[in-house]
Amino acid sequence: MGVIIFIFSYLGVKLDQKYSNGGSLWTIIFSLFSVFLALYNVLRQVKNLNK
Image 1 (cartoon, rainbow, N blue to C red):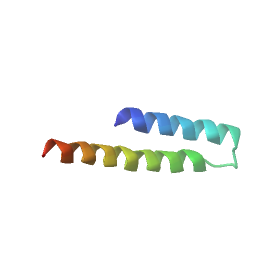
Image 2: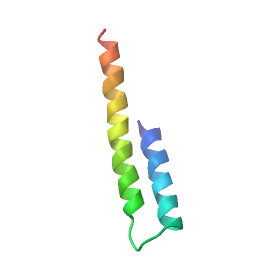
Image 3: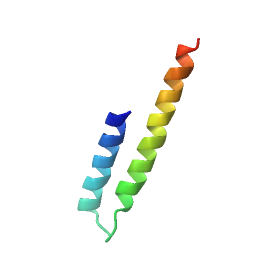
Image 4: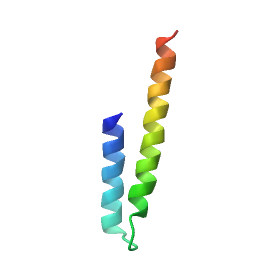
């Protein structure tokens, strides 16, 4: 879970550095996306444990 969030947040920071528009839009987008992706992954694994 932490690895997914770290990788996507790092990617967002790098995109903000390359395509900066004065804010941290890419970092916010990729961080939120990574949290939802990590939660989905955890919920999917928990569901498989119950089978």
